[in-house]
Length: 107
Image: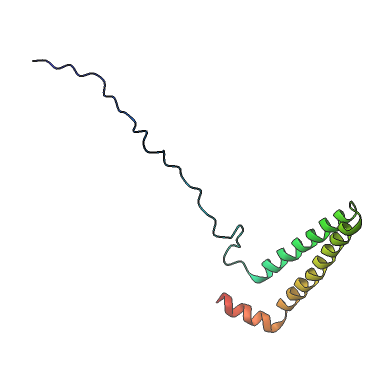
């Protein structure tokens, strides 16, 4: 007795919708800072970023009028003020007390 075997046919069950992969949810953090970066590097980068923010806001103020100009100038001045605070913090890192604290943290 001989049996003829044709190709195997699979039928899709259309009663179940295809599963869709849901996008993974962010945990509320878009940026992160590498662990182990020293305080001086963090403050130096913050200082540079504040200068950039101030420059961008001042440039914007040159291209807008009225209350928008006032807001742009205020943002520039606020960034300048925070920049001064960050620079003062950088200066404090050079003080002997801070050098001793930093030496303890790295050991």
